[in-house]
Length: 180
Image 1 (cartoon, rainbow, N blue to C red):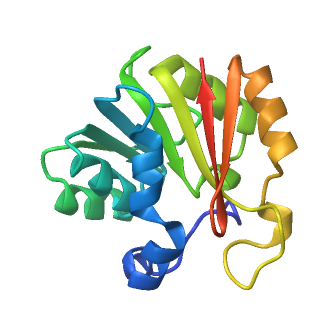
Image 2 (image 1 turned 180 degrees about the horizontal axis):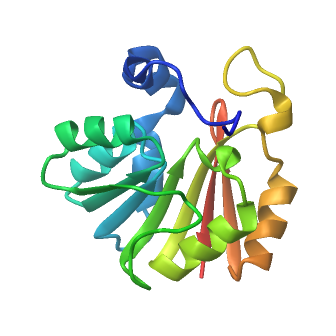
């Protein structure tokens, strides 16, 4: 079992405090402000919180998660959207299937960072977005040893074939936009 996978209550994923801490609306707007995005794959979708926010912006959304219980919640929230049980390392979609691939505070939980970004690069037409915790000790979120530094993510993105990484610091999180 991966000790970094979220296994706490699903209801907590949609708590008002968490939605506020994740700055969901701001993140979605930042993701959509500079490119024409019409489709989004939410990897590690959890309860579909971000997928639902993208959907409300008229995006075609799909979600994958390793936890079948999360996919069931996603299907209740977005019954007309595709949702599949799948690891981030092996996305069940064809090359260039989505304009954007989104990872909402889940990238730090994957088993093989480089393989995940290479797979995202394969499936994305335009860009990949990572929303991650700031690399500092805080009273919430994962412990520091599970957080990823900006330098680590930038180097990894380059190794996975991305041309540019744009970094936007938020209150408790950092938004990384990886461009092809």
